[in-house]
Each structure stands twice: as C-alpha cells, then as structure tokens.
Image (tube, rainbow, N blue to C red):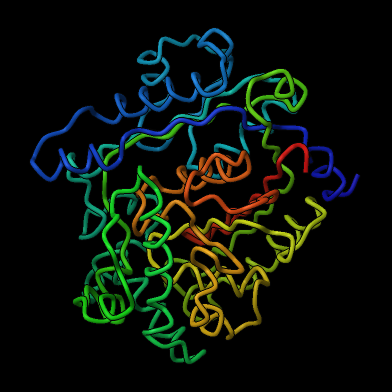
Length: 394
C-alpha cells in the first residue's frame, strides 16, 4: 500500500478533546520577582488537571501518556498519579503524532500529552557553549568559537541571508511581532499585552543584528496538556471534537551542523515535501486554512513558513507582511494567541491548544469568525512538520 494511502487511513480518526494551560502572566510576574509557583512537574500537573476538566474525563480514563521534553515520562506519571499501559516522550508535534499512531494501532485509546517547563526560574541556558540541546543538535554549539553562541545568533545569520536574497525589509519583518502582539492584547492569558507598533519595534535595540528585541521569543514558566482519543469516543464528550486531518513531515539534515539547509535554501525542499504530504492527506490547501500557527522562537520562522507552504510565492512574504494580513482582521491570521513572541513560549505546545480553541469557537475576543480549519507548521533543527486540524462538523 502506498505511504499516502496508509496516511489517509489516519485522517479524521483521532480527535483532541481536552486542552489545559497554566496561568502564564501570573507565573511570569512571580518569576520577575524571583519567585515561582511550581517546578516543571507542577506546571504540567496544573495543565493536566485543567485539560481533564475541559473534556469531562477522569484520570482513570487515560491509558496513555506522552511527556514533554522537560520532564521524564516515568516521574511525570508518578506525579500525575497515573498507571498507564503506554508512555513515551516527545516535543509538541511529535507528541501529537505518537499519540495518533498509538491510538490508531490500538496501543492506547485515550492519551494525555503533558508538558511542563520551569525554564525561566530554573535559568535554562539557550545559548553559550553549554546551550540546552547542544548535545543532540550540534548546530546549536558548532559556531561558538566564532562568536555565534546562541540560537538567536544562528537565526540572525539566516535572517541576514534571507533579507539579502528576497529583499525583505526590517519594517516588513517587524510586522510579525506587531501582528502577534495585537493578538496577545486580546488574550487574557498572554504574557505581553502592552501596545506595540512598528515604530516601537524599529526603535528597539538589536540583540543580534538584524534581529531586535521583539524578534525573540519569551522565556517563561508554564504547562500545557492535551487529551487525545478516537473520533468515535470524542463524539460522546462535552466539547466539539477537533480532528487531526493532515500530517506532513520531512527532514532536511544533510550538512545541518554547518547550517547549510537553513542558509542556502531556507528549508524549502523539506517544506515543500511536508506541504505536499499534509495537504494531500487533509484534502485541503493553503487557501482552505482559516487559522495558521507557526513555531516562532524567532520572527523569521514566519515568512519562511508562509513561502515554503505556499501561502505566498517565494520572495513575496514581505508584501503579505506589509499589508498587515497576519493580525486581527487580516486575511491570514497567524499565531492568534500571541505566539512565542508575545503569548507564551511553550515550545509549540501552546500552538496546539490555540488551534483547538479557535476551532471550538472558544477564543474570546481573538476568535477568528467561522474558523473550521487550522494548520500548525514547525521547522526546528532540520525537521519540518505540519499538522492540519478540522472541526468535526466542518
């Protein structure tokens, strides 16, 4: 059976039925005062409890667990008081994929995806010669002898080349941060809710040129949980089901240590392959997407995703950004909870929760009217992944 046919068997078979998040702005305020409410496991437990409350299930209904990368699955299971038959560990998008495969193959029926991180109060190092993740992704530390000692420096190098090739201006790139702040101002659980316009962006200091302060993600503590089960079971629960309709994945790791996939072609070959796969499985395309969530540890991720997945022609992202099309009222709402730049840096997990809330029409003032299809895109460490979600009655 062709791979596309095997993937098609998963379409709309799996549903996210519950979401929970911690109190990001409250915990951020505590951290600024040198205090913290929980450790990573405590934030995870808070989100898990809220996700169960959201869908009306109990802990005893859960027979699978996927822990986020900042906690150990064995210990997390103990903290949550769970004795599941299947457990694993993954980042945000791989957690969804692993849960979907486990449920589809009968390994589990109802899986909790639980993430907790105390990265701010624990002082997690995302730069320097001992940068978090450098043991797994050598590109994070490879260039340290030449002064590129942080993720921001690596993405600044990418942004410089991208601007040189496409002509993207600082004012156009700044619209990513401005649009996401506009959404964050409508989200009571966003960390950064103060006003931000393009002049504020342009007057902010460079952290690593051409990236300014507002091009960088937040670093904050928090937790996110998702409850995933079969579409059949989802129909019997209290909330509208949100179905997993499309999956796309393509790695681009040749010469990844030297950053060549980023700097030469901006991950486009992998993006094109992932786009072809996710849209074919979902039976949809860019024009069908009502809400787009993009992994945005740095603002430059967004124009790369827009071009690589066909939301605009290659080299035309600047025009879409300049038109203000990504913010509230725009033709392509992106990172509608504020994203990593203004909402909360939950390493892609919060983006999944926002897809669910938008499709359930529960996003309050930031709600995109009549949203029926949402897409998530990430390109991290040479791995491009995308998910398409659809409201069950769409």
